[in-house]
Amino acid sequence: MLIYACLVFAALMLVFTKVPVAWAQHRAGGYDNHDPRAQQRMLEGFGARALAAHHNSIEAFPIFAVGVLVSIIVAPGAPLATTLAVIFVLARLGYWACYLANIALLRSLLWGVGLIVSILLMAMPLWM
Image 1 (tube, rainbow, N blue to C red):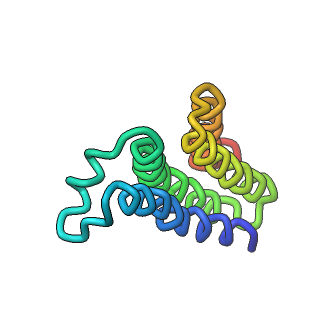
Image 2: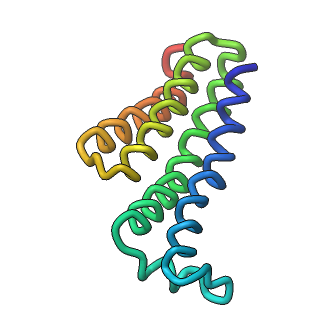
């Protein structure tokens, strides 16, 4: 059951990671709902990092989701799959926080952890 919660939480992170972007847009003269993407391209500093973190969350989710679905099909209820899913969520939360705080090296390491976990989930049929 926890693996499903991780999948749902990872999907919700696509929305959560947009909040600091919208906040930065608001601080940059008000949220431009007519052309928010043009306004986002002009963000600097924290706002630009928040946008990059949001985009990366969108990019990372499909790989993780496929990995979770493959692991559920190949090894339903496998404790390893659940552990990997939890690691992914924790790594992505850390990644997001590091991006916002401008901690580049740790951010990159956490990105790598998330990617490796997603690949391991997808590769479960090779050893299960």
